[in-house]
Image 1: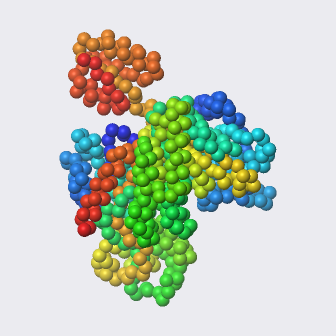
Image 2 (image 1 turned 180 degrees about the vertical axis):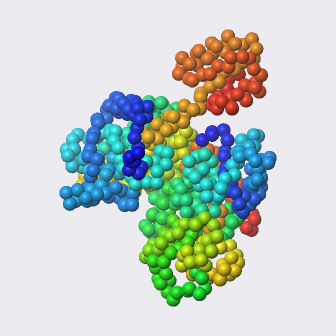
Length: 376
Length: 217
């Protein structure tokens, strides 16, 4: 059989159908929020895609120039906006559906060619823009059928503020950022200990990856400088706006999330579902990227991994929503309840004979239902 | 990922008992948690904890995929696996070091004199990184055990291997040339589990840290 190159895949009809279904849902959603589609070339000059890990980029020679397959979509869009769209009225709201390429050790959910959908909001530095991007990311995941997911929201300036407060030199800052990003708490501890800081300052730095929760109280306690406090104020305002979108319940603050792209300058986030061992979407604010292309312009955006969403949807199918079981004499009630819940869109299986509560619980766990309702 | 249970992967071998005893001190244990257990998944139903016991080098894989939320693994194996997992705590036990050794009779004058020779090792990735950082290209021969045998029978000029006491080296007339890294056991976590089960993982890590600090004091 003829092989295909490492890290690529064929989509057979069932998978292709699911992929197209997801993409068409998103292609309808984004315009309804005022976002216009955009398509860029698959290849870019290598010098355009700076700031990326050189070992993971697929390069070749084309017309005697160094070109590379696009590594992600934010940089090509920033290039386009800073050149051909620079005189358009701001803010610019753009979305894309595209394949991108990275050389990686492959595994389920990590291929060398993979598909992304995303939105970029350019020309707006306000928290309202960040809140819109977050709300749109949440809506995107919901619209493709994911129910069980959380958004972990951080702010890169919080950690930067703490490092500047302690006058840590930039090379060590990079090392600290890397250990926070990877949540390598052992490395973080040893780097911080080697700096011989005051005990409270060292403790604060070590605590960054553990600042996780529904509120920012602890983070405010250790934020001993204006930059870090402003970062937290920023997050509080974003969350407040998300309440109006009805999306605040999805948000968990996590100041250890700083993402692995050097270009982020403000809020950053990642979306997680228990159906998959890696993030399914992520994004953040990147106010300096367009400046590097010659145009001072704040921007914020996100991308979701279509292959990962497909995996998560397939995994969640395996766990069914709900089992309804009943004590003897309660079958009619059980049927009525099952009918009602199904009409609300839940997957419901109804046990067909009366059972004890223990027996019902056993079949719930054996058949891997998320929830049991027992009528007695 | 199972939302209800916290799944912890312990490695077989010498780290197993140390891991089990440490976790027992914070009440994370289960009936029948033995290395030779015939059950593959050992659960504590009351505390909603599951233990799995797997081959050492597989621990990072289970954790990276989220099949286990947490795992205990030596830093040497973790580095070699290059898996994308969170590293939460240095557990202090399982101390060893990874080093390069050669037969006593074949010592060379300068370190760079070993360039372009063959290295037998269980850790080709770490070894390659180490030699690259010294600007040396080597030929790596991946073996799965009895590494010290390779230079004796002429399979390689040197070895990169783990030593704890140095007895094996002496018995085979090998001398250590360079230490590559010092390793201890680490507590690792899946990225998503860390976020979605933070409320269980954080207190557990704190409790372990406290025990380790008390033991150190």
